Image 1 (cartoon, one colour):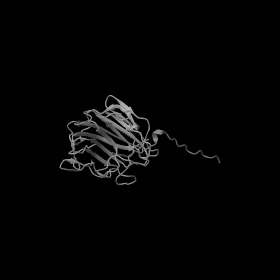
Image 2 (cartoon, helix red, strand yellow):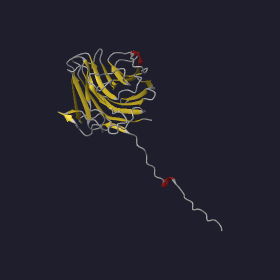
Image 3 (cartoon, rainbow, N blue to C red):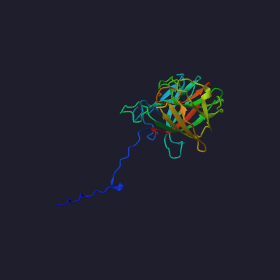
Image 4 (spheres, one colour):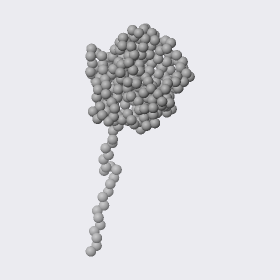
Length: 271
């Protein structure tokens, strides 16, 4: 008895359905307005990838740090609400704000694995910089701790800084990236000059790619007309870092008042 041929089943790409795997991300674009606030001082709250709200960073407790949400002068035309931070030291010191990413794998708080490649990006603008003088600096980076009086330290992974003075081979007033040797040490000659100056009223876009497996990082800085992308740099720490993202002014005079703005903050899985 002849065998009956088996039916052929044809597959085409069009007949298959693929479900893309989305990348985890953590964001804060301030689009909800004040959110969790006390007297107009925006703080946000823990959750959705954050383990803390935005908190003041002050090495001197007499420094007042004000936070608010505005939409009058967005950092980019379509960004809407943004965070504004201002302070006027009653004594010299470091002040600013910080927020800590939640450690993975806390399922309630986090989705981005800080022990794997990830990217942190945001828009940033300095609106007022009174008393910018000898010894002053502005820093964006990873703080040693979320605690009020903790700044940069041996546990910090990356940081970017603009100094009033020339530092090492870096021109005065330009954004510089720190190329660490992964042992917690600090050396002013290890700053890399971006060639992009810190100018009030200019919106900068920062994109920071962290690679914890090799304790390495790189960054891109854009100011609307110029773009700088670094080579792969080393962490300052030999560890994974703290996950505390901080923005702060370092001043040496009681007249050093500053206002800066932040928006479109996003942390996502990297390549």
